[in-house]
Figure (tube, rainbow, N blue to C red):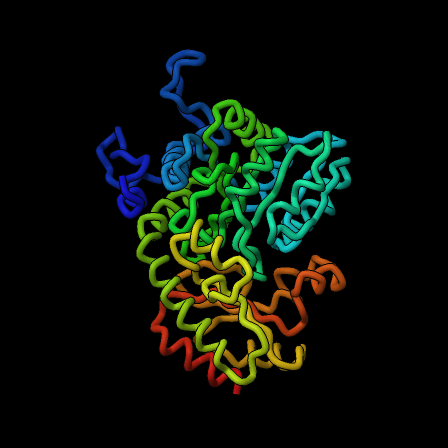
Length: 379
């Protein structure tokens, strides 16, 4: 199947009970057995649930993987990956990443004896000098949040395979519509399905997708043992959202380009971060590994004035000031005080997350309305 068909049919089949085209919401915790162990593949809904299983099959299909896992949040999915490790293991992570991931790594797993190296990966070759015998995982986020940096997944994969290290890619910003990390050599793909996969700002969910059977077996064990699964209602909503992923992402990309180009020409804007500009340092890699450039745009106003940035986001009317991203509606955020507040100021400013940075999740409204809204908010 081509991708657009996969969003609707990939990994899916009519429900065996009554032929329902959409998987029903199996709102049950347990399942009747005819004799101990005599069941129809489902015993207890922490372990398996038909609605969640349908979603996990869809996740796997979208990323050209063989195994999908759904979790109660994106951070729960990352937490499961970290539980593959043991004290003394080391992780090399991009230094420009979602603040919640940074918090999980530093405030939780560093306390369990796992060491993290946060490094710039604009040049993937930079990863290799941090690898030693304790290195077990490379964590890549591309495009990064909120700097929209691009990391060469294929190059990172070559390094990981050379040293027998796992490569995990947070594919939340790009979605499988724009890039498929498993095809580029990654071992694990992670999504905050709360964002583009769900697409309607009505659920919180995480996803992992892998190809390797043994790795999948370990992750399924962690998923069941730790229990951070999503419920059937959220699984149903995610399945519904995925069916329009391709048409939504096309419009997100179109609108993202229009907004980025408008901001670039605005006299009050210092810098616009968007991987579709040929001036972007990794534009060539973005063109190679992505189908388009996505709907996320970040920018910094001239003078780097905190108060001006706050006034701008408060003045927006079509864009909603809110956490999160990837919904059909346009959202704006102030990373320094919102998504990246958990990263110390000195550390976040090293990677460019300054006080006046504004991050936009460009929705699927009319592009002209979005540009007019930005125009009036900037004054």
